[in-house]
Image (cartoon, one colour):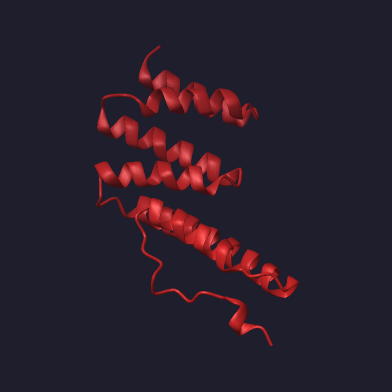
Length: 134
C-alpha cells in the first residue's frame, strides 16, 4: 500500500471512529525510515492519544519527534500544552490528598519523576507537603 494511501486509510478509519485501526496505521507509518513521514505519523498519533486522555503516551511521541527535529514549533507547543495538563492533574491530585489529610509528598515526587522522564526539571516548582496544612 502506498504511503499516501496508508495516511488516507488512517484518516478514514478515524473519521469512522475506528481508533484501533487508526493507531495501527499511524504506528506503521511512525516506523517509516523517511523522517518527514515518520514525524507526521507520530504527530497525528500523539494528537489522537492526547484526545483519549493518554497524555503521557502523547508526550513520549512528541518528545521522540523533538529528539529528531528539535526546531518544530508546533510540536513544542503541543508538548507544552500536554505537560501543562499533566501538571494541572498532578496539582489537583496533590490538592485532593492535601484536603484528605494525607501526605502528598509521595504523589508529587511521582509526578516529578514522570516529568524528568520527558526531559523536564521540576526542581524549581513548589512542593505541597504537610507543613502547608492549617
